[in-house]
Length: 168
Length: 195
Image (tube, rainbow over all chains, first blue to last red; front, side, top):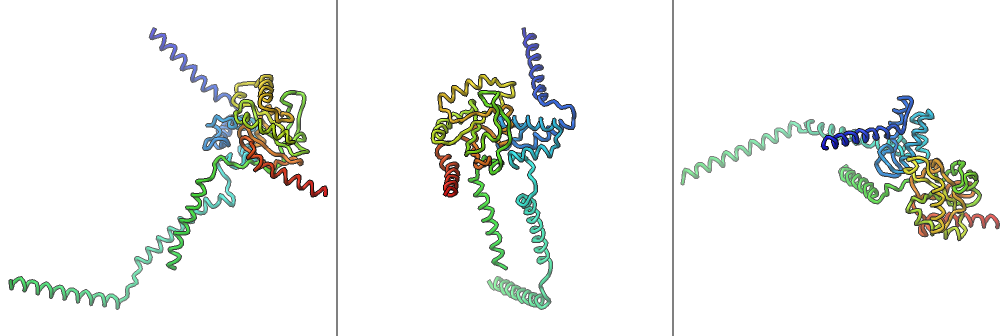
């Protein structure tokens, strides 16, 4: 009996996986290049109904239609760019995960670069002001004189302290 | 020089704050339809009830027409039917584009007879706002219109240009706010021309 159950489970799992393969075969292609184009397109086309899912992952109604349309256009021999243009014309730039560089999106590239350059310049400038010595000779002499004076005073203090302790 | 050092961080902080604050209230599902202010796409599709009767783009031109993409499987479409029926009684021309459930269609041929029966029942029950229904057999017209689901509505002017679009049900508030003003400005224009 147990053996029989094992056999049933084995058979059902075989058929279940065959089913999964059949889903892939919904979109048969005669050439590998077209299949590659189709796979790439459904990955980079965005589902207009659902947030943050591409057409390949989504099961929404519109995603099913877009997948079918992509298949149809690729089969007709359209290039990847032509399919993307077709979709963008109908569903705006939202439908494509790879936005074009234009006068608005260019700032996404310019601003980080600008910030990097600014930071590098800032650090360089700071380093220069720290290492570059602005202290002149008269200043040094003045400082040495003060140090000498301080040392003398502290020695005098120390001496007077010791004499006081001796007195006690 | 010192004041600039103080101002730069404050200004950049404010700019970033305003940018992010605006993001808090932006609706990510609010995507403008690409077809607004464009010509209604060309099509050649049969009537839902009669496969020998065909409609082209001219069928939605000539008068202000509300093109409503809908299906009996869609719950929100049920909600808007009574209000749209009232609009029809007030003289608004409404044309339906019947949109099959793509997930059902993926399982094979859709039974048109079954669809017709469901449509008749539903319109008898909730009101029929439609002059006629175009059957979007392969949902190509809906795709050309950039439809992302049902219901969606397009207001087409007499020249065949889409002048307004609504994703979701049409109720009194939406109609008064987004569609009625456009019709009013048109009738005002017509009046001033006839004068």
